Length: 354
Image 1 (tube, rainbow, N blue to C red):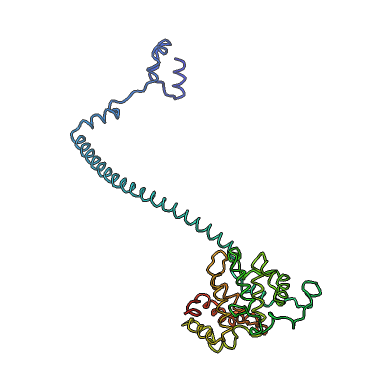
Image 2 (cartoon, rainbow, N blue to C red):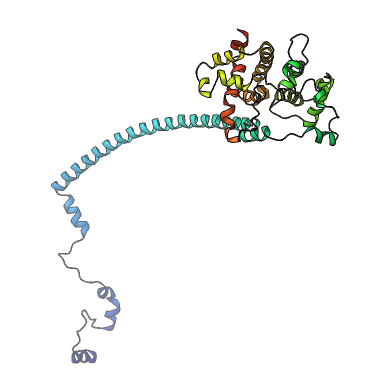
């Protein structure tokens, strides 16, 4: 009571449901913890149950169910169509994957073959050919001082550095014997004919010079005992280069075939006209030499085709020294001799036989 009076004096609100006695406070604890709920506040569950029980709500749910069922059916049909397309694309992918694997294997094989071919076949370098062509050879006096060759007078030479008419002829073919000997030695050995870089690889210079003086003495024993064909080919090229009058002169060539444009059309006829204008000795020598070069070009193992042989042998046959011509004009000046030599090799039957 004293507390009540004190609270009233302070103007504080009195607690509701205050227990009258101390024991009532312990026995009626639940009454203090629970709040009174208004009657008009109903649970949402009761409200939903009443709403669901109405006829209009049941109709709406049925329509929604039918709508969702139709949507599900359409989506299922679209899924079936997409699934078929996916299977078709998957089969196409597997097929393309197999084709890609096959093409990749073929590409790797071709790449490996091309690499091996590129490593085994070295293309011609025009600059290197020019350097070799204009390279200064050691003269006879320096070779004699180094005891590389014997002291034999140039006037004693019967084969090199002379005229074709003065060279010793073979007994059967009536052409220079040195040409017959060199060609016979190269063709008699299958190993020589299949040697890579035949007529392109330079032989030993000292050996060729020693063979030179043996051949001038009409001695071919050492030439026939050579273990590689490059020295034999070097002797033949040296003989052709040192002819005082070449097999085909540039003056005659310029008269019949003035420029490269004349080789575009009817080049076989032009070359045939050039060959027929030669004397019998030069024509027979050229025929024998071209027959040999055609055999060389037909052997794949030596890596020498008609184009390669045309580049190498044209300077020997036409003997275009070009000592007074600058290297920049080398290609234009040697184009016609090169094409003539290639044509004589490729069209040997039409030019020399028919």
